[in-house]
Image (cartoon, rainbow over all chains, first blue to last red; front, side):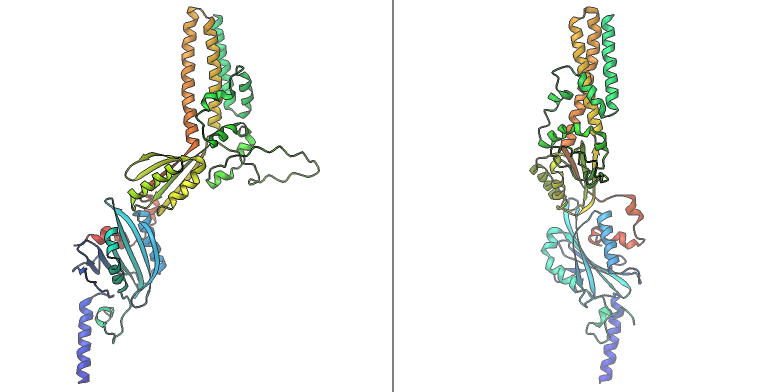
Length: 173
Length: 289
């Protein structure tokens, strides 16, 4: 009985990990819908009817650059080249306690103020970028939901016996 | 014939005086002594009237101090700091000579600051966020400290503020948003200012002489004198205009705030070779499919 159960659990987990194909985990909050087929630019993207979008990318950067390096590179890129205002920065943690950095930007698009939040995590020789953006007004309205979604991101490889195995096993098997 | 010679003579005298004056401050003395009695120094009586602000007055009154070339050439700490010069106190009397004690070597910081004719200009690049709101605030700051709006369009605003409150205005504007680039320049126009003043004074002296000659001249000579008088009057008006413009530029500093990225070649050169880095941003995130 025990043997059968273990085998079944193992098979299900393996199937789930293969099907998921994402080396991270993120929860979609009520009010958002997850969009299909967002590759290659995004590994995950979800949005609200009002156009607030949350996305996650996992980029293979090997051992190139630590968290501070990429935070600086992205800040420079947005401020100098795109004219984004750096509204704030803060140290954050993913749901699996991986240290990260949040960069909050502001930018006008077609004369309207927009807010853009970026969370960076370094794990698995990858750079994980969780982004959320929309009009300033809508971003303020969805602030709690976006905070919750950004905080739900896991970037570490899960252990075999972890309950949410399928979505964060890094496709190692 | 005699009148012709007089006209020519007066012109040559004025020209030579101007040329000497253009060469440096020491020429100020002969120029002043050449003025007709009763004429205000530098012809500045009327021209100086628009200098209503205390700073402007101080600037004007320190011209003679600035004429000392050794002082003018002294390093100007204020210029290096990019901050407007403070209102100059009266120059203290020179200390009594003391042969026993050697003078300490002159240090730039110890040198008395000379109020120069400085035109301050600042250019700020602010991030493109809440532009309209921030432009309104820039305009309000300008007005609140006694300045005025010079130019405003979709991405840029230029205000002019009293020179003595230039730093204050700049500080307040910098707090409004994310400053991407800041540039402050101080242009010293002391030479230009003095040169114009001396030339103007001499031109006025020539005009007075011509008017005196005209009063005595016959019909034939009067035509030539009037022609010359017209030319001199025209040049006086041009110089007065230039002086007025310079005074305005000195009295009011210009601050231009641009809301756009710093588009320089440097940014392109230093971009990291990761294509995804270029793809990041609102347009990419919000362009869902």
